[in-house]
Length: 234
Length: 234
Image (cartoon, rainbow over all chains, first blue to last red; front, side, top):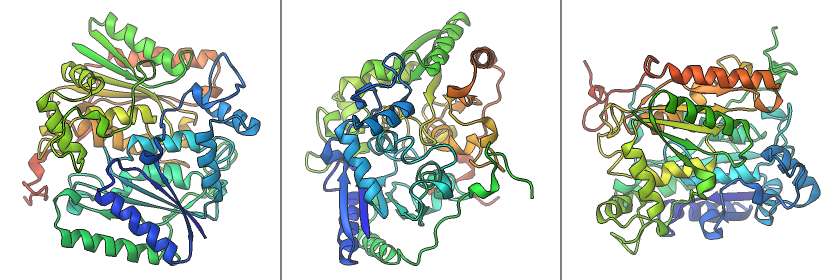
């Protein structure tokens, strides 16, 4: 299996980086071929702009998704984007490793979604969710938080982490067709002791080793919706 | 009232830009003092990194939030960040105008949250939600989507837009203490006719003119949680 780790943390000595290192070693030890996109180390530019396109379908008015389609076909996408598209198309398993910033990914990873997940290639028309182009492939989120686990949940001060991650897990990974496996979260990271951090890394390794038996999150099926995405009455 | 519009769209001829222009004109006509942060025009850098800090609390290991606190006090934050912090602190009303990319803000706006919403200034400890530093101030999301309104909701193919916007409305704007007013969404924008677009702009103007009577979204109160953020049994 080919695994792609997309990593977004600016500090190489961070615990988040240690999680990425554990993932890389564990997936390799399981016999998988591992590629890492370390977005900070690559100096990845997260800003969608006209500079992403070496040619233009409409030089006068940039519609980002339409130019993505045009430039992919023409082979004129910015090389930084085309390289990431190729890595993602080749991957059977995608692991996102990032610290939770403002209930979401850091901007550098958000921009990887914005620029790499090309319209027409990773989604289009009814080719979303269980009909998405990445069907048969799997993904997982691994994240670090400052908050405690007791701070997230239905009766907690913050919503359940699943609801917090909805734009990433459902609106991005499931949207393009991937099966999303349960996330791994390391809580209260800046405040816990070394033994707890070591335990997190052990638990994360164990979580990854169960990859093939983890039950994917539920997702919508396009069978339930007509060509206008209206629910089909049964 | 001082209004800050934060705008994130790369195409000056876009409908999203027309929404920003309507907001700017309407708020000014209502007698408010309007400032615009046009992130693309500013060339705003959304990537959190060590380059944000002119001095370091810990030169050897960058903890982003701790360095934000240190550099704010020392007056050594990158000028691009400090300028946005001052604009935000001065604002009574903040309007975010952006296209929905991957169930979220474009990366350039996500990075504005990551870099500008300083730890210690906009949140810290129990100073979140109704005890957040921005209490008494209001915010609103105005967004454009490719999807139809019927595609978002409890029985629709995608979740309700309120759930999609949870990281922004609750996890960011409410988190720092702001009252969040109901969002405005323009649906199916690339596919609708000019009459529909004009109607959206009229409706958006009307929405903004009711600013003072709109009921803010519900938010948690810290009164319900103890010092460890555990629910208080009553």
